[in-house]
Structure formats: structure tokens, C-alpha cells
Length: 239
Image (cartoon, rainbow, N blue to C red; front, side):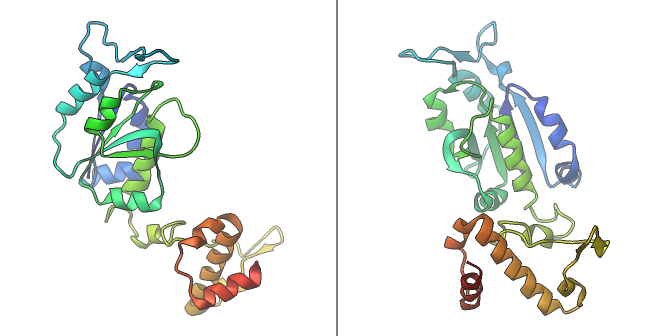
């Protein structure tokens, strides 16, 4: 996968792209990234990238020229997905991460002002995405969050392919409780079933715990999860 980031603060990406899973993905040749400072593409001597909005109003608006000029330098295909980080976008979730992980090329446009000139949105963007109903200073942090969620789904990025399939949301349910050594800690014990060696019992316990945790913490997820009759009986007992 190739990812380009258009930003006014390229240094913000140095840490996240050079650590942990993203670093390993780049070293394996599974991820190629480029961070572009679109201020360099402003067509005025002061490299101004924002201006006052027509019609008046608060704040500044990102000018179209720097973004269009920077996009012209990026080699794109018909399959390139250009993502605008905006609170007006569709909510980012695991299903969307899975969809984006199948793309060969992504471009993140990270703004840092009151808004974007509408022509950026209508002419360049394929996906408008929000990471939540709250206000951030810019689009860089959402782009980093999305990159981490997307790249870990690319085949061979994780050492164990099952590790992301067991994650919360990948199955449609929240993840079950997990334990490691020691067996006893400050009066708290690991459930006996996990030490039984009976893999069927363990799988059943984990599934039931996922159902229970989802019921208590994110019951909305159960609306779209394909519940079996056994699942429905278990949930009814614990409501």
C-alpha cells in the first residue's frame, strides 16, 4: 500500500511512522509513505495557504491552490482514494478500516483551519471521514489513527494473522477478557476454564464473554451482529 499525507506539519508523522507496526510494515515493503508539506505549493511569495471566507464569518479557510498543486505531484490511479478528514464525514469504524485496507493507494488531506474551500471537497475527494464528534486542531491525528487501524489489516503486516481477527470489532463483538501469568494475583484468580485444556469449552466461554461484554458496554453492536438462537438465550439470561 502507498499512502500520501498532505499536511502543514510533516514532523508530526515522524514518530508514528517510525515505530511499532507501521515501522515494520515499511521495512517489509508492505507500506510506502510520503509526507507532503502543501505550504510549499502555495502560489504566493508569503506561502499563504489560508484566507478569509467570502461572505464573512469567523476563522480562516484553506485555499484551493496549494492542495490542487500538491495533488498534481502525486501519481494517482482510478482506484486512489482521497480522504478528507472532516467532522462532516462518515464515522470511521472497523468496517471502513477493512475497506480502506484493500486499497492500493490512499491520500489523506489534513487541514488545519476553520474549513476547506468547497472546491477541494467537490473536485478532489473520494471519501470524507470523521473519527468522532469532537473538535481537533487539525486532521493529522485522525489520519494517524486511521493509518494504524488500516495498515494492521494488510496481509503479512502482523506476525499472526489471527491477532487482528480476534480484536474487538473485527468479529462484530467486543473482545473477551484475557489473562496471563501468574494464576493468582492479589486474591484474583484466572477462570478455571482457561486452564482446563478443553479448547471447545474455552471457545464457548470466550464467545459468551464477548457477548456479555458487548451487551454491557456497546449494546448497539448487537443490532447488526448475526446472533444465533443460543446467543439470544444467553443474552436473555443476562439482561
